[in-house]
Image 1 (cartoon, helix red, strand yellow):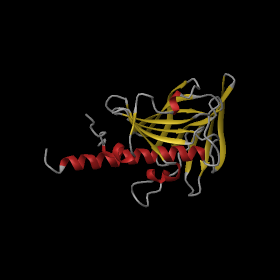
Image 2 (cartoon, one colour):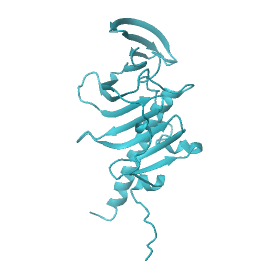
Image 3 (cartoon, one colour):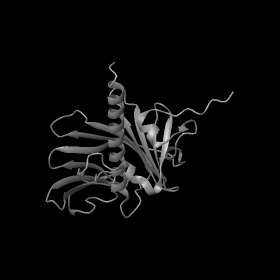
Image 4 (tube, rainbow, N blue to C red):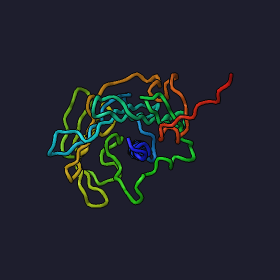
Amino acid sequence: MYAGEPMQLIAVCVLTTCVFACDAADLIESTSKDRKAFANKPFSAVLVEYRRDSTDANKKTRIYLSPMGIRTERLSVQNGEPELIVIKNHHTKQVWLINPVQHYFSELPNDKTKETQRVIEGEKKPLLGVLANEPCYGMMAEKQSDRAIGDSELSVWRCLDGDGKQHLQHFSTLLGVVIRQEFQDGRISELQDIAFIDDSGKYFQPSSDMQQITIEELFTGRVTLPDFVE
C-alpha cells in the first residue's frame, strides 16, 4: 500500500459516512416537518430503492419507526448487515450516529445538526415521500384507486409537486404511512419486509455495550486511546 492510500481510504470512508448521514437526516426531516413522524403501529421495514427498468436494488436501508423515534440502518450490499446507523429519539431529542461494526457511537449536539448537511454544496434533494403520514404531503393530490385489506385500506395517489413533476404514492391506513413512491423518472422507493415491533424503546438508543466517541473519531476511524496509567 502506498503512503497516500490510507488517507485516501479515510477520505472515502468519511465521504460515504457523511452522505448516508445526510440521507438519513433528510429522511428524518422529511417525515417530521411540522410534526413528528409516527406510525399507527410501531414497525420495521427495509426501504429499497431501485429503477422501474431494473430489479437490482440501488440501496437498502432498514427502518424502525414508532412514537419513540426513527432508526435507519444502511445495509451492506455484500452481506445485508448494518454498516452505519442513525437514530433520532423523539422523547430525549437526541440524535446518534453509530458504527455497529466497531461498536462506537457519537451524539450530534442539538444545536449543531448541520454536521449532517449535504457534502456537495448546492445539491438539492427532494423530500422522500415514503413514511409520510399522509399521501402527497405538500403536493396536489388525486386518489387513483383503493382496496380493502382486512379492516384497513391501501390506496394509490397521483401527486403533482411544485415543479410540475408527477409521483405515484401507495398509502397504508394500517401503518398510517406512505409505503411506496414512484418518481416520474423511473426511480422507485418502497418498504419491504414489513413487521410489527414492540415499543420498548430499545431500538431508539445506542446499545449499552458500545463506546461513545467524538464525531471526528467516528468519521476517521481513529479512536483516541486513554492515557496509560501504571
